[in-house]
Amino acid sequence: MLRRDSTRRLAVAGVVLLAASGCGYLSGEGGAGGGGDASGIDCSPYEQWEDIGGSVSLYSSIRDEEAERMDRSWADFEACTGIDIKHEGSGEFEAQLPIRLEGGNAPDLALIPQPGLLERVVSDGHAVPVSDGVKANVEEGWGEDWRSYATIDGELYGSPYGANMKSMVWYSPTYFSENGHEVPETWDDMVALSDEIAESGTKPWCVGFESGDGTGWPGTDWIENALLRTGGTETYNQWVSHEIPFDDPKVAEAFDLADGIVRNPDYVNGTFGDMESIAITSFQEAGLPLLDGGCAMYLMGSFYSAQFGEDVEVGEDGDVYGFVLPPLEAGAEVPVMGGGEFAVPFADRPEVAAVHEYLSTPEYANSRASEGAWVSANQNMDTSVIEDPASQFAAEVLLAEDTVFHFDASDSMPASVGTDAFWTGMIDWVTGSSTDEVLEAIESAWP
Image 1 (cartoon, rainbow, N blue to C red):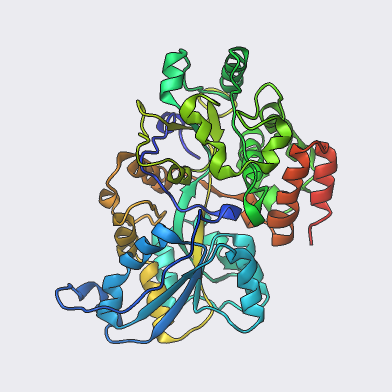
Image 2 (spheres, rainbow, N blue to C red):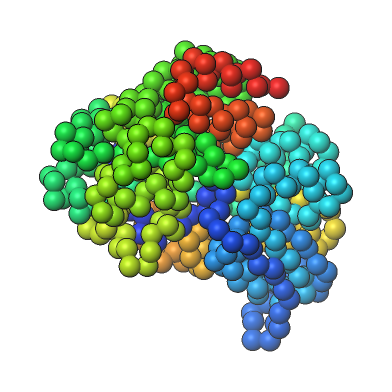
């Protein structure tokens, strides 16, 4: 857990952490890697993989500028080892990966953002255990919480890649300052602030659950964050592993907490319509009214800064900023919830093992982070390579010894539940279905 004093406010200037869960990435298609000329490059960091050569296919949901940054982050490795990393990014990654695997068209490596999907590809017999070198790197670089997400029946099948935080509330410092508002320290403070804003004639919250094939996932973030605050880590973990059913009273309590905001007609949905408009408002567009006073707050992951234009100043005195969703009580520990990807191998050729091993090193984390818009939870990365203070802070939070990272629950559950029934259930819930009906429907989807 995170101490309250270290997370009262989270600056997000320039942070475009890679989004996990069903949110996918924002637009376009990914690039492809390529070999390079090693002249003028210090190849000493890659000596153990020297002259391996060959080609390695890497499949992910990462596209556009993020894909270009990835390509640059391993360019020296390619040039020094002769390995050509062919990256393919897809906006339909979660749906297409199982199809490709079943059709005998498996990539050599995939960056899987969902532990539930990772478990599925392992149980279906497609993934292979990581090499000894990758295993050693993971044991040295990540805590038990991260390692556990890729460990199945005692065997490690993946290495953590990027990380992001999804317990953030975006707001406009200008709007807050002009109206005498302060960042809330408790949930009750946040509700009182919402009441004050609503009385002024502004809808305090913007909310958007639409995300193409992943529609509904932003709603799961509300429930996951609420449950961490009402039930704590133990209840959250029991819920994810189905030790308590989805329709348990403890889960209903979390829905009720979120209900007080998301389904409150006085609070939502800034400039977009009534409560039911949430189902058709895209998460990409939902937070933009913050810029003109259309709403005052928006719960969305740290990666959302990518949606603001270059002319938008992100900072404590800027156009937009962020604070961590507060706890129920003052002084309580603040839960950290988020996501990330895992590099999972589907082939055991030497060049595949070499690429995978490099991706699991702190040296690679440093290389990728130096390209911008990315943070790793690798405990041995050099955070000084991260240039903007907000990303530095995010890395500090993720790497703090007392941080217990709670992986996005919907991504950790079986796919039939987490990325199907749960997503669908959130749309039913926000368009008028009762909490009991939604919980029962999701519980019935457990395999």
